Every structure is written in C-alpha cells, then in structure tokens.
Length: 170
Image (cartoon, rainbow, N blue to C red):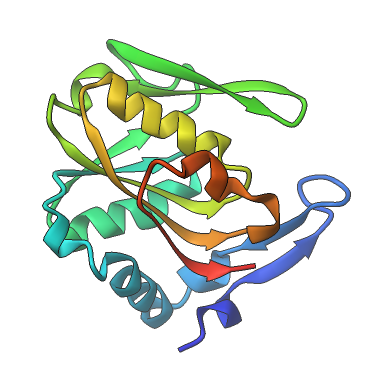
C-alpha cells in the first residue's frame, strides 16, 4: 500500500506559498491508518520505550495510536495555556518569531524512555523543543517518529542527536 495516495496537497494553506500535506484522507481510511501505525511501530518493540509523546495537534492522532499499539502511555505536548497543573515550557524559533510547547511536569518520570511523535518533520524546531522538554523532565528520547518528512527543509539536522524515522519523504 502506498500511503502517499492518502495524503493530499492543499496549495496556499495556511498561507500563500505553503503546500499543506493533508492527512485527512489517510485518517478516513481505517486500512491505511492501521497500515501506517504498523509501519510506525515496526522496530520500536525492542527499544523498551515507556512513553510516547505526541505534539499538538496532528501528532496526537498517530501518537496515541502508536502508544496503544506498543502498550505504552501517551503524553500530549501542547501549545501554551492548554494544560492544567505544574507545567514545563520550552521555546523554539519560527521563521518569523518564536513559539513554545508545554508538558505536564509529572507526565515524564526520571528514566522514562520516550518516543517523540509528530505528523510532519519540517524545520525540526518543534520536535527539538519537545525533545528538550522530555529531557528537562528526566526522560531520554529513544526515537523521533514522523509520518512525513519534508526533506528540503533539513529538519533532520536539528534532531541529529536522536534516532529518527519518517515513513514518507517529500
């Protein structure tokens, strides 16, 4: 099965000049979704991970399915102001400005082995910030997993200290 057949390009979204990779058709097809989860999980059973984190928002979709498939807990990493309780925050650079991510401080324990998941690896800033959050909590990132990677943006460079796997390359 070619998963690229279930990803559609949406030109000029969310702004002019951007080609958005829409995963809605993939999610709408149970067989394709299950196949993608199988491929994302392949090779992860032996690394003894304890948690999967998913980065808001599309990283929640396959991140939670991946955690369920592997029998692991799922931890959401969110945009600011969306998590209650004690949180840790990590800023990262955008093309024009900065943004930040947050995690509940108690969601990753000292020594947790963590898989970081997001739908797309673009410039790598968001995923690198999520990895730093895991480390601030005392966890260790054992793999960064992505449904898609936009190779021309070289996001892989920012994640060079980590094992990295992307199913689809554009």
